[in-house]
Length: 319
Image (cartoon, rainbow, N blue to C red):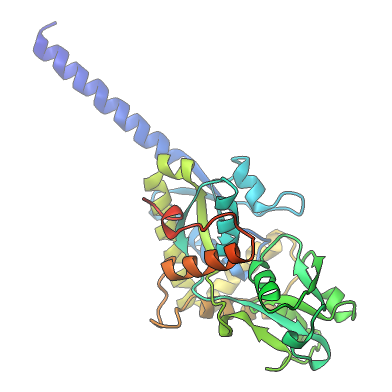
């Protein structure tokens, strides 16, 4: 075999190996686990799958919801999924705990958390009140506020509904403006400016839902991750333009997963989630993690001993 033939064969083998590696990477399925059960909070991802946006982007995605015994983050830790949604404060805690994450898409631009007090009382006057908080997390800013304002709330954990509060067992409860807030409205709770404290209006407007990957996985599958993020973004943009058709898709997921809800509730949720995606300053859906909000959340959590060190914006993005 001549030197020229050997060189040609060598180049051919290298090219074939690169092709095999590329095909293998593209053929890998990204298992995506939202942080909660099927609902309009995750409508954009359902749309991206149902309308073929993931397929068009050349990425295989399978949506698998968490269970009561296996939260989304547990699935990510065990490599049972490659992407999940997390609130920013949750992501900061996880990175501070030694698990590097990368934010590949930010959907929330505003904070949705509220405190609703019983008997039309102002939450800021209820020192030592028994306040409901989610057992799976999400309440980091409320804990910071309680410490900072010397409210000394007694936190009572609940799983997923407002029954304890409605039954009168709590003085107040945390709620998301797209979820439990509407459950309380449907339960006949009086909601006024006096007894509803909106964190976004009191110096705590910190972003919530974003899509995160373990950094090790991300570094090995950057192209896939970017395609997944762009197709998901396209799903959310389509949802904003076609809310009723989006609800049709959401209800398919709801029914498939046997979730106890209805179209009216999911319509309210979708409308509010889409509203929260619009940045207050630019009036646009920016789909980006804001450095100032990362800094604000991180400093608040450090000050209140919820983080051992300040987690920076650079630690959460592709470097």
